Structures are given as C-alpha cells and as structure tokens.
Length: 107
Length: 114
Image (tube, rainbow over all chains, first blue to last red; front, side, top):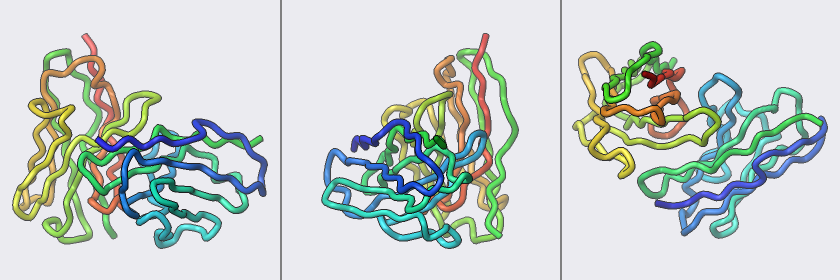
C-alpha cells in the first residue's frame, strides 16, 4: 500500500495567516491526490483534486501543488470557518490511502 | 442535485455482521464507482473497497478481504457494504462516496459492543 505521510498533525494559526500542510507519498502517484476538509460530525468535503485543481465552489484562498512525491496544501489567508481537520488522499493505486490528518485551530 | 443517503446507526455484538446502505440520487447510478471509507474515533480515514455499479465488479482492501462485501441494487440506485465477524475495533463511522470524492454520504455510526 502507498503510505501518505502528512504533517503537521496539528497547527495553530491566527486569522489572516498563511497556512501550509504537506503530504509525502511513499512512491510516485503522479497528480492523483485529493485534499479534503472535515469538520466535526461531518463527512469530508473535497477541496482540491488532481493535486492542484480547485473543486467548484471552493474559495480561491485554498490551493494545492506538487513537487515529485511531495504535495502542499495552502490556505492563503486563514478564516475562522476554516477550522477543521484536513486530509490528503492518493488515488493512484488501490487501496486508496489517506494521510493522518492535520487539525487546524485558531490561535 | 447529487445526494448519497445512508442508513441509520447500528449497534452490534462482537461476531455479528452489519449491512449499511447508500442510496444515490441526482445522477445515473451506474456511471460512477462507489467506495466505502471508515473512520474510527480519532483515527484517519480508511478505504475499505469499491464497486462499479455498472457491472458489479468489486475491489477490496486486503485488510478487510474476507470480511467485507460490497454489492449494489441498480433498480434501487443503492450500494451496500456488509462487514462480518465484527469486533470492537470495527466501531467507526462508515461512509460511502462517489468515485471522484466530491459526494459523500452523511455517515453511519456502527458501534460494536457486548
């Protein structure tokens, strides 16, 4: 199985801050990576697909990029409603696998 | 609009089986694969398997092979996930999701307790 190593596991930032989360795949997955936002008691919400494409209706402050097997998710200006846990997911190989999540809190 | 509606919460005893349903609406059910993911308390999301509703082909994670069965009823636009030989570690919220990840069910809490 492909391992997805996500960091950090938790992050505290202020409103307006730039926030970055990374995910490293254990092997090449091309661009087959999603980023999700999950709020307590809710299903994950797709934000970014194919590593860098913004899902329809998702604010443009969210973005994603890839460098080899390293993937980066960025919130350009943190908003209070962005408080959630964020996950990466690879869908290059089955079983699809997820990162361990990053819990984002407001400082 | 696309919706995936799952069946309600379940409480099961160890060794029992559970079957969770996922009814799709707002699109042609046979056009997109459906996968199942679970999330144990405080844990990461875990992919269990998926089904091609068009032809019924399935693929399971090796972790659940032999214990999980995913099926579909095209006449009801519904996918099913059955997990057998339940143990306490199977206590989790189970989700169905459409293959591209943009649409998810609301989740079904399965509690395994004696």
